[in-house]
Length: 204
Length: 225
Image (cartoon, rainbow over all chains, first blue to last red; front, side, top):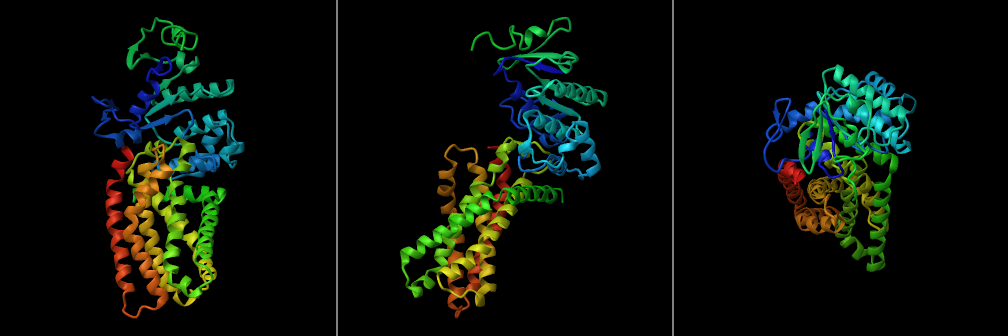
């Protein structure tokens, strides 16, 4: 599912709510049958959140960052698995370089790698294309397709157009905290950064 | 066991980052040396007086230096999106407290391993015959300081004036541990004729146990707020 909406519409807030990093001020929601309010830890086991900066450490190498992610997720870190993921995200050659030397795009790739080393059922991607070159954007599209093929639910919030956005089975437009599901027939382009009611606001 | 494994992962990560950057350790050692020099200059060359107040000066130095370490406890999480990054993982959030606490204890003990012998040389006090007693006091005092400090550092991490608020909130809560540590250090150095060191060590141990139970129990609430 793809979420679009202008700045401040609440896309990141919604993703953080689903990731249980924020508490709903009222009401409740269920993620894979688990209540946000009563079973946040069950939800954390099943979800992975990709943020703009990623949950990464500058003074650890790419491999060490993934190693830490696996340990914190309760998994036994295996070098073979870490090497496979680094290869997949195109960072195998800089596996031992400290992350402070990475570009924004490389950081975003490593943040995607953090999702791949875990066995998640819901991937929450906040602006996954931001800061990526065309090759990086293709990687995001491929990984989203892989998630879908593996039965992982993907909730993606984006301002930018991309294959993953266009191929979404459902698209929701978020305006001032209200979610409207778009009919399949409606063009998405006017809701993205091309302008329109939910794209970049007319004048800010 | 899962809690301990996750806590250990945080200790490993924090100490690895510190070993590479050495930001906190270097700052703490230089700051501690500076504090001791200032006291030394202020009190003059009277070696007898310096020995008498050694315990107090040492623990004032440790407390001031420790604040530097505590205020940085959660700062290295900022590059990774703040505490949200750690909270996003499944499992008991108390692992975050435990991991940060152990990291602070190790770092502060390493600084003390430099600071205490340096203070002995500066204040012309032979510490070697009292090494065992001093080590016990330093260990219990450091654990107590870190237990309370790591908790208050989490409480103040999101405040705009956290550098001011942390010592303001922390020092009143640390009075028992500083009192116990200063008295125990002085008695160890002066010779424990009445067997009072054991009493102060038990006070420190009791403080450590009580505050550890309270802090780790309410940490998830502090983290959410």
